[in-house]
Length: 194
Image (cartoon, rainbow, N blue to C red; front, top):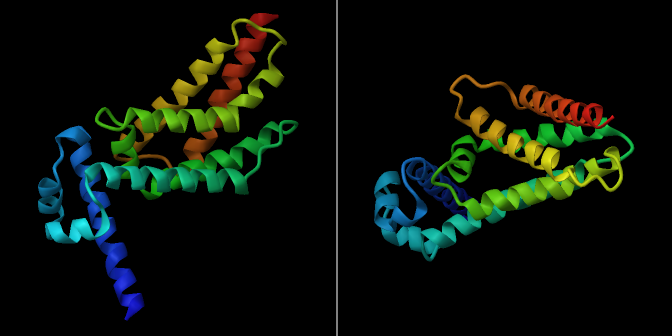
């Protein structure tokens, strides 16, 4: 009985997540009501309130879970500063997570998404593997912030483009592309500084 109940709860929450993702692709979270969401997924309001207090709490829980998944990937794919190739497995897993929940990720990172969440993702990426870039750049480089910002914002733009493409590449393909673009940017900057 408990297993059946757990399955129902998971199914209901998945429906709510999918509905919220569809709605967030059209409008901001501030414009979405509980009534509109439950109508979208065809469940009762009382069922929604069994799981969440309001739309904001639901979004917060979804974002929390996404950050937890990303953090877990980071812990399972440690990056070795002495080995730039150790970054690739992390990037592949990062894209795999987004691929599994494509619509929701696109909604969160899109124009109606939560910019605070986008900033959290950027900070996490920066802390994880972009923080190792200074080791490869000249010491005390006052311009380091420019390639750093270029890479970070380029990665977020690449993710948005990939998620919104109807015929998109696999997580492995786009991870390799991302890795090479980061490496080419670093090399280009280093060559310019010589």
